Length: 189
Image (tube, rainbow, N blue to C red; front, side, top):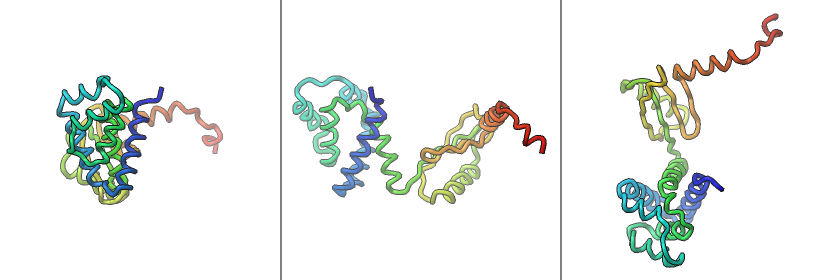
């Protein structure tokens, strides 16, 4: 069975491509943000989307009009009708997250998560922002987290890349290095 994340990525790519082709990228992006807020803000909506809906696929698609009416762009309504026909409305939160990541990348915006070992000073956060901006460009979305398990330092995730400058990361690299057999030729010279 294919993992739900694979479906979500495929749906997000298809939706973004359709939005770009129809010149509705901005409207569809706003709709997906609104859909995500609705999902997390309404237990009733989550229950509706996660249960098996009765009727034929055409009747199920008609339910989309009853739930969302004309609140979204035609592209998103059509997309939701497709999801309900395939029984994939439950994937909405995964799809919205994937869509946002793809839309951000299409606009040159980088998602950066900086996880500090303790609450950072504003100057530390600004330094991370500067370093990432120098390497990737000035357009970025920075999220700051705290994880005491890092012991010291910071771990920075930029899109799909990770830079680990934490004490835990350094100790793990040291441990892995010590596990490797020593090259006697290198020692002798």
